[in-house]
Image: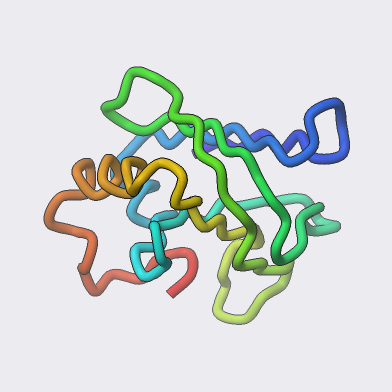
Length: 124
């Protein structure tokens, strides 16, 4: 999974995320969030440039999907570097209701049968 955070440059609040396998999608998906959401790891030592409530535009390329999905959302989770439990630093983005749940549905279709599994994720 690779993320390119363009915040602070010519396109503030735009995140490009490529999720290349189902395992990475499972770790990132946040099904307990209204409208769904994704956790985006950020390995920079200084931490993320985002704060809770920041509006974000996500260009999402999912495993088994040909096109990038444009998704509006906001930051609802921030894990700083050095967090307890060996959690990776990064941000959680809640999907906007603007797409009527289409992004959440596509993710849950890819993850069919494993959304409510007991395996740990990046956030829970």
